[in-house]
Image (cartoon, rainbow, N blue to C red; front, side):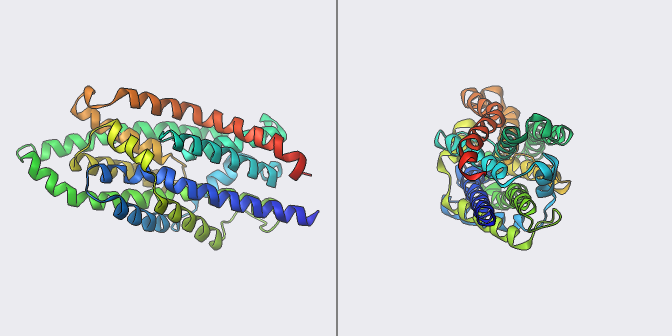
Length: 333
């Protein structure tokens, strides 16, 4: 049934690019939330800058794509239906959390989605538990690193400018925050577009177009463009939650958050670890807030964010499992 297989490949690629587009307006909102909330940039300027730099970041490496594509399951257990169901599960969860303004992780969603689809297809024994352990460990450690680094950078800045009037500090850092926001947007591109690159390459290997897991140039460009357009669509619901409701930020705080977050994300991307941009930047905001006082953090919002984090992998896995069971009788034969 070569025609059906080709149709499935097209559906998988289309769904992966749709996921990247949704990732653009869902996760990139986190990358620009702080500079928008501190009025260092207008919403439109921040979105345009983030879209361009997400594209640039997505083009520089495929280490994270390889981790996603080879670290979760053997190629022999990957079918077009598995990949399609995994992506659809992630998309559904991303849209639910976006609707409620919760900065849940698209990284967690795609990993959970692939896990659920693989379990539906071949059982839990088909998963690479060692690879998943390393991936999940990086997703757990990166928020801790974000809190610590955000706290440290903020304390260093406060000590360095302790004799400067707050108004003067914020005036200077409003300009510097444009650079830190750009740094953050670029680092987001190095991490998040990689997930869809890995998924599409998995599908191409399964179909037989590729004999080995090597991300083609056209896949890099397509994913980078999809994320860029998604970023341009904006994500005001999540910008409000992260940049305004969680911790009240001034330009110096935004600079520290973006600098700390970008450092964690670029460091992880350089070794192929698929960290969550969402988790890193929200944890860096928490670290900056804690450097002021405990009451600077809106703990009700923090609780909602934590619930979304905990639920994302199992929820997207369940949704992908259901998608597989529903679609497989019609498209999997």
